[in-house]
Structure formats: structure tokens, C-alpha cells
Length: 367
Image (cartoon, rainbow, N blue to C red):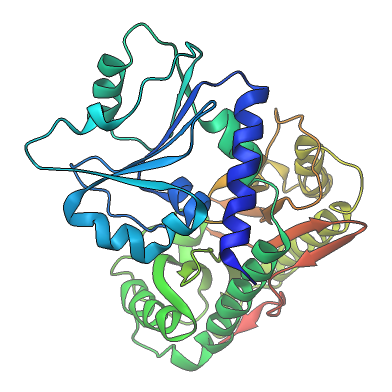
């Protein structure tokens, strides 16, 4: 795969959407959007680094002089982007050309507030808008390259889940097991660890539990939600539910209902369906089995170069899901003071099929 061609295509789509939305200038600072458009994994410093796309102008990237070599090494100049440097004693914002078009200036959603305030002073009397109107539209529809990268990330995190029964030891606390899992994540294809949720016993009823000093004991339900980022910048995210020793039959019955709800949701992805209608598939099934009140979060979130991005599978999002959308399907139930469970896969809507990036077992794993 020629990544330069991939990034050029993304830049072309961005320019097209700028014109469609009447945006005069697009300002992208270090973070996922800059890496997505150019491949440049720039440092987010107090010094200004900014990709500047403007109507009827060639694209430029403003970088501190000491970051020039890093910018060149990233290949941004091969994309037709002019690298403009600034000295420590210069006002970096003055390196940005003010074009004659007085349309809105779209700014990166993750831009530091201090930089935004400086941009507002520099582009006096111009309307500022969130670049989400452009970037979310592009990033939410994955290319073949991105689908391949998310599939690879899914295989990596599957490999971690499959090794958890081997690394668990009696005497482990949540935090101890989380550390072992974090090591596995980086040993199994990922460049970095994004999160390791290990929630045992009553803590399993807390969806975003921070691993603590709670001892993992026989009879515990163990919810493990983990993810990392690969060298290509794409994220993994998968949750599986484990049992230490044995569990009560009533929990197993509830878990089987949850598994059915998750599988029904995955089957529904290939239909012509909106995000909020997909959210209702698992929700309605759980409600019909007296578990609806315990499903306390949305069904899923988009994923790509960030763990959470568009589209969000939640009530109130009437957008139709389209080919190339990648998102989690992760229904759960959480009964305070007792236990919880969640099953999470990353899926991609692709023509009349559904690509499932996660293929480790969804059965209860007894360890």
C-alpha cells in the first residue's frame, strides 16, 4: 500500500468538503487529525505546529525550525505540502497567510485553548467553527487500508485475551493482572497501551472501573476491557468476561442472554439501519429478558486512529450507518453490589457483509 497516495486522497477529500461547507481555512494542530491527513506524528508542544489548508492556496505546514527534520522525515513534503519554519524569536502565527476569502476558519477539535485564542486574534473578525464538520465526515468512513489496519489491531488484541488464562495467578489483584496484560499488549503487536480495565467481583458492575488492590478470588466474575494502538496508528478495543473457578447458574443464564443480544446486534449491522436503531437491537432484547435497566451505556462507539470517534451507536443519533463505518458493539449488564458483564467486538460495515475484527471466544472463560 502506497501511504502517500492514501494521504493525498484524504487531503483531496478534505479540500472538497471545505468547499462544500464554505470553509475558508482549516487549521490542524498535532494529534489524530494531523496524523490522519499527513502521517506526521508531531509532538504537541507549546510551540506552534499547524497544517494550514486554505481555499485557492497550496497546503502548508508551519513548524518550529527545530522540528523541520522531523517534518521532512514524516514525508509531508512528498504530499505537496510546503514546510514553513519559524525561529524562536518570531511570532509563529504570522507565518500563516491570510487569504482574501472571509469565510469561516475551521479549527482542530483538539487544539490547545491558548493556540485557539491566538488564532482568533490573528484572524480578526472571522467566524471560527469546529473542524469536526469536515474531519468527522472523512474519518468515519474507512478506506480499504484502514479496514486492513483495524483488522490487524483486532487480531493483536484477540491474542492478548487468549493468553489471559495463562498469565492469571491466584493471589493477583486487579492492578497486578492489569500490569501483566499491559505487558502482553505491547508484546503482541501494539506500539502502546491505551487502557486496561480489570474489574473483579462487585467491581465488574462498574463499566469504567480503575484496577485497584482488590484481590481476585475464586467465584469472582472478571470483566476485562483492553486496547492499544498499533505502529500504524490504529486502535484495538475488546472486552471479554471471565469467571474465576465457578459461578452461580443465574449469572450464566444472564450471560447467555447478553451473548444473544450482542450477536443479534452484529447481524443487524448489514441491514439498512441508523445508529440509534442499531442501539435498540440489544437494548430491546435485554429489556425483553428483564435486563434492560442494567444496560446503562450506549451500544458502541466509532474507532480508528482514536479509540472513541464517530459514529456513536446511541439513541439520538439518527444518522444512517454506511459502508466503511467501524464501531464497537458492546452491550452489557451491571447490577450494583453483585456483578456485571460485557462483550465487545469491533465491527465494520462493508457492503452486504459485516467484518468482525475480534474473533476470540465470546463464551464465558473459566480460569
